[in-house]
Image 1 (cartoon, rainbow, N blue to C red):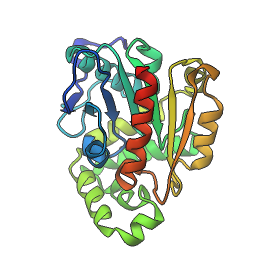
Image 2: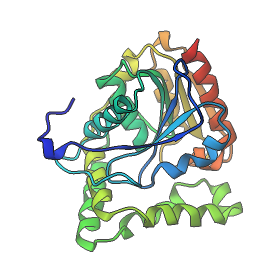
Image 3: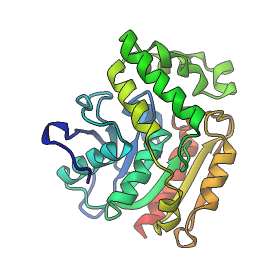
Length: 271
């Protein structure tokens, strides 16, 4: 766990869907940036297993994040919430920033992670230019007191097909972004900028792994997903799932494909 001052302990909020018995593994869903647990709603509607959709500290219904920004602090907050909920093991699925959190959780609390789904994400750290851009956005969000610096992501997170044929999704994502707090946008950007390369964590993880990517993802494209797959352990029996005509928000754009991938992973983890 992170060495933190008690006042800096972060709180994640879990949104439960579906009934669990004592023997069933739930699927824990960790959202991307700069949205919240609602990005998983379409996928949850098509999943036949119990889910716990997370609001990371500072996002959605969760209290503000405090202290030194880090992905590790996010992961510790998720672990604490799962412990409090009585979850001993779970399939953990993380999209984009949520994937960084899922990998940190697998590193810090491997006892919790029975299966790992990495959705539209990557294992490597940021290149210097990307890191500087994150820090610039963080400073702009703080200075302006708005989410203007990331509002354009309502389009860039979606694939070309979604933008052309489903303008309602652009409006939906824009609403989610506008609902977030500028200070949380800044905190999360700094946390992601500071994250290390966790490829070695994936290489060492021996539970089942599924890598999901939208075929039109421009932020973490198919090449990133293929790199991730190449660095899974032979023991993990990893699978790659392509979500057709979906961009970076595959759980929203192609929920049937993502739900199917998660159900197959859940069966493998439960076996």
